[in-house]
Every structure is written in C-alpha cells, then in structure tokens.
Image (cartoon, rainbow, N blue to C red; front, side, top):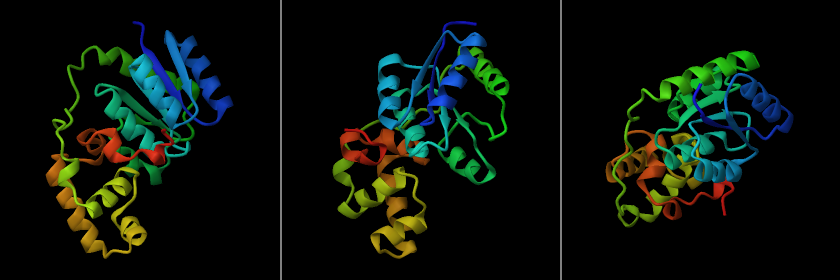
Length: 205
C-alpha cells in the first residue's frame, strides 16, 4: 500500500488512538489524530491527508467535514458512528462513505485501505465553484442565513434563530445558491473566503 496520510477526527482520545493503531497495523503509513475542528483544520493544511475519518459524535462534526472539503478538494471523507438519523446529514456533507456505530476497527480499516488504493484512480472530484468575490453581493440578512446554513442548520432552525418565516428563509437560501454558484452545501464554504464565511462555529481563531 502506498504512503497515504489519514487524519482521525474524534474528541474521544481512547477511541481516536485505538483506531489510529488499527490503521497502522493495516498498513496505513501515516495516521494523524485531531481532537477538534481547530486541530483538524491545522492537520489538513499542514499534512494534506488523503482521507479523513470523522467521528460524527464529535462537536461540530458537520462543520468539520464541510470545512475539510474546502482545504483539500480531493480529500476523501468517511463518517464514523453514523446512525440512520445522521445519514442524510452525511450525504449533505458529501462524504464518500459512512459506517455505523457497530463497525469494527477491522471493517473501518478495510474501508480506509480500499478508498486509499482507489484514490490514485480518481482524477478529480466534483469541482467547487470558481471562487470569486461574491461576499459583497450578499445582503446582510443573506450573510446571516449563510452562516447558519453552513453550520448545518435546517431552514426551520434558521427561521427560528433569525425570527423569520420559513418561506423567507427559503428565498434567501435560493438567492445565496444563485449568487455563489454552489449546488450543495458542501460547496458553499468554498464559494466565499473564510473570513467572509465566519468560522466561529468551528472553533477557529
């Protein structure tokens, strides 16, 4: 197996370390641990991993997965401990695979090795929209909606947070997609500079 780099994101250290050891035994040359969004972002920037394993029980797991995709466009992402209620969220985040709470370390390792081996045959993933200065095109209210949208909130939750009608939120969301050129939420973070997005929910400085 070629030298691939895998980052394991989980705020449970025992789980994170045990999984890292299992991956090394399976032949993954470089395994890096990350306990939170800040560490995940730093590792993605510094080590350029092939694949990220994200424990969905980790705080801001959805935000982490979305942010990681903006850091490495060909990064493969596997969501761990995904129950049926979280499957739609994982699909929304554009993960490559998801494994349930009962997945063994061996099963996780097999999935990781298969994806790493296949990564060399992947020419490119769906490209994010061309980055342009659209921050100034969004209204103040659209920026409020944008921030909650990329944090994983539903239209109903956004409406409640901003004291808006859900139909109004839907109109704002449609306008945001049109202005950014994004087709899914996983692309929205890439559509604007990080400073314009406001990544406070990810715990970043």
